[in-house]
Structure formats: structure tokens, C-alpha cells
Length: 309
Ligand code: HEC
Ligand code: HEC
Image (tube, rainbow, N blue to C red; front, side, top):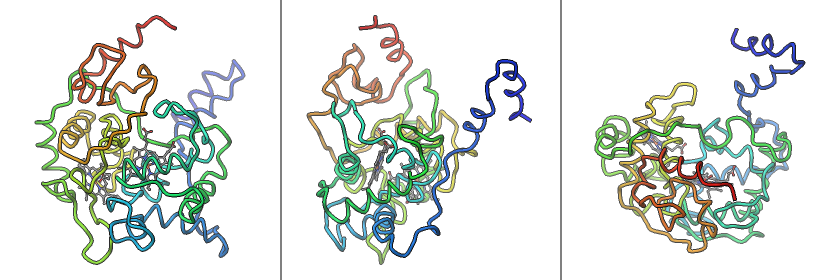
């Protein structure tokens, strides 16, 4: 029923409102791997690199030993195809693009190397390596039906409202024990596969987890990721965490130690830093702690009320 309502409302204006209703309701669907032909070996290799990164590039990797042992798929679920599971639907359609973090135009290759260095604590790989060509081939295949410059519905992470208060690590710890520790363990180190090079349950903090320079180290990204995807098997249609739980658990996990990586060139224009970027300097008077855990509405208001340049 809900679907037809906008059509009725807007019919007199001659707008095809059902398009936006459709858009809201049906996220992007990845092309079917069954349509890959026998000769699409690069695309297949790219997909394997996403799903089983550690087998190829991890501490015991077959090709190189350059990462912390996580798989790209640990954060880009179902080989980067899951709606609001940080999927790759927008990559081929939106890169190269300008990014404020580097203050420059970034290619897909640069973006891949960003996650390799920041999320996988590794070193960059050569643009001409088979591995990089395979990853790019996979992104292009995934996004082949996405029109240029569009971000399909369901790309990236699910929206989540800010709390009025700061996120609470003490509440978060209690919920972590109940809802997360069975897989990620009380010590947050996850569980390694006894025979394969990869994790069964990836680590949430410590030396083998993502570094302080990773996108997931921003509390909003972490909270949005777990809200729509954790505990394992959760989908955005049926979240198992409340908004408060997502923020509080995120605060607890991000208060734990992890490898530090610092890229001094990040955010050359400091006024463009996301408000939850946990490292100063800032173009506002709020503390690093408030930028890390909130409350965020006052920071948001500060930037909203700045006179336009
Ligand atoms: C610890 C979690 C994590 C891991 C592991 C990870 N990523 Fe990411 N990746 C993210 C997050 C979070 C974002 C979005 C960050 C943002 O926009 O601030 C992202 C963004 C990206 C994007 C850009 C997507 C877009 O639509 O703009 C690409 C491409 C990417 N990652 C590739 C990779 C590859 C390849 C690997 C493995 C080598 C990898 N990532 C591993 C967390 C991760
Ligand atoms: C039933 C087991 C299970 C439970 C419970 C669970 N997770 Fe996960 N989690 C996983 C698995 C498995 C992955 C990797 C997914 C993949 O590779 O397909 C993952 C991935 C993650 C990641 C991204 C990778 C990383 O290591 O940073 C985060 C963050 C995360 N989980 C947080 C949580 C939080 C917070 C909770 C509690 C609300 C939770 N998970 C509950 C199994 C679980």
C-alpha cells in the first residue's frame, strides 16, 4: 500500500514519484557470478582477493606477506555485495573522484591502497600488479550496470541518527559481552582458522585489527556498520541493535588499543574533517574526546551556523 501513496499525492504535479519510492525500497543487486564466463579469470581472482585476502596477502600469504591477516570481506560483506554492508556498488561509477581526506583526486587504485594500509595495516601494492588489476576488474564488473556518477541505494553504510549524549563505553562494554564476545571473544582478538591463513571471527582491536587511520576507527562508521550487519547474519531490514547500543558498543571497541598509523597529509583543509574524526587539529573549539565519542549535535550546530564562505 505504502508504495502507491506518493503516486496519488504527486499525480497532479505530473511527477513520477513511484521512482523514488522504488529507489528507497530496492537496493542495488550485484550481477550474478553465474554470468561470469570461463575467461573472466581476472574478475574471479579479484573476487577471491576480496573474500580471502589473507590467503594471498596475509602474514602467511601465498603471493605477498603484507597485511594484518584480515580479509577485505570482513568489512565489505559478501565480497562487497551486501546492501548497507559497505558494498562496492558505487566504486566504478564514482572514481576517480576528489576526496577531502587526501585533498586530491583519487583513482580506484589509490583507494584500494588506502584500505590496504589503513584497514589491513599493510603496504600499498603496485598499480600494475596482477592483484591490483584483478581488484579493479572485479569492481568494474560489479558496477557494470550502475550509471556514471551515481551511488546506488544500499551502497556504503546505513544512516544512523546521532545520540544527544556522548557514547558510553561502560554501557557498551556490558552489551559487548552479551552480543559480540561469543564470536569476537572477550579480549576482542577474534578466532583464527586453525588450518587456513584467515580468521573465522576477525579481531576488533589489538595488533591484527584495523589501525587508527582506518575509516572504521571513526565512531559513526563503526556504529553504522554494526547497526546494519552485526551480530553476523543481521541485515539492515532487521537490525538487532538499538541506535543507542550501536553507538555505545562502538565507543567501547574504539576505546581499546590498536595499531597506530598516522598519515600527516590527511585532511589538508581541516574544516572539511568529518565531525567524528578523532584527531585534531580542528577548525572548531571542541576537544578530541568530544570528536571521538560525542555528543555530536553541538559540533554539527557549530558548523551549520558558520557564515558561508
Ligand atoms: C576494517 C574494515 C575494512 C577492511 C578490512 C577493508 N575496508 Fe575498505 N572500507 C572500509 C570503510 C569503513 C570504508 C568507507 C570509509 C569512508 O568512506 O570513510 C571503505 C571503503 C573502501 C572503498 C571505497 C568505496 C566507495 O564506495 O567509495 C574501497 C574501494 C575499498 N574500501 C576497498 C577495500 C579493499 C580492496 C580492501 C582489502 C584490501 C578493504 N577495502 C578492506 C573498511 C574496510
Ligand atoms: C555469530 C558471530 C558474530 C557475532 C555474535 C558478532 N560478529 Fe562481528 N563479525 C563476525 C564475522 C564472521 C565477521 C566477518 C564477516 C565476513 O568476513 O563475512 C564479523 C565482522 C565484524 C566487524 C568488521 C571486521 C572487524 O574485525 O573489524 C566488526 C566491526 C564487527 N564484526 C563487530 C561486531 C560487534 C560490535 C558485534 C556485537 C554487536 C558483533 N560483531 C557480533 C561474526 C560475529
